[in-house]
Length: 347
Image (cartoon, rainbow, N blue to C red; front, side, top):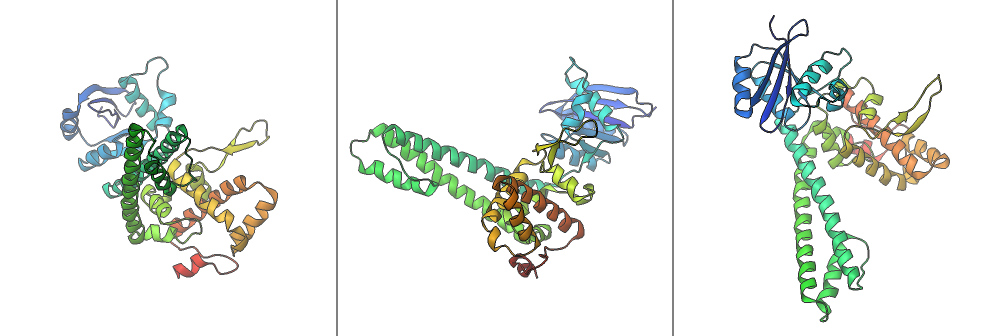
């Protein structure tokens, strides 16, 4: 029998192949080096290749698709239950990928294009620099506290702190050098973040999907750009709730005996999109009193019954569902009830 499916366990330089036939029996069990992978699939008859959506998964998916194979990406957590307990190795991982992919309820992840991954690289670099900027700011404030100096909150107030250090002649020379070096490094990071954000804003302005998402109150151009680059096919999400669940914004369930128990949100899926949606929802909480429209009225009633933090997550969930509707229907946001600035800007 011919091989109809190959489970491919990828790594930096070693690749494990597990091929099965129509009877789900193993026909190929082989380890390949990086230079051997493409020649092997060039000789292999067209089949379905399944691999985990991690590392360079999208890159190899594009390469093997170009060779005529049908490539499927599967989430690593969907493969884990099929790995033989106590036998965690590359061969068992490749076999588990085949087993997981043969299940009728399995969901595959669409392959991203190089352009989409390029935009996502901008977002990843921006997120990393922001975290490092916060770390540097905290380090500078910690060093200042060692010498009895304090400054107000805000990264822009660190220049005030450096000025105090320069004005203090008794300040140790070595400590002054360390502080000035960290502050210079922090300034470079701020410049880098601004350059990355400029490119992200350019993408948000040119991408049709991002412009459509940007009409939603609470979703800015950065969030819109990230969602547009991350979602390859909105048709994979049957309902708005499925999209919100993919972002980890739905309650965690622990139900039994017909009793439904809901807990905190699952926090599954894309963490960066979820974080940006919650941040956008937080900004709208402060403007709830002046927010016209049905969603604004819903939010004000919710704030009367629930804490602000819970209302923020609930609003982020609603924003995700609205985003699904706009992407699925190819529309812009129009506020129900009173006119809203977002709807007017989209007209």
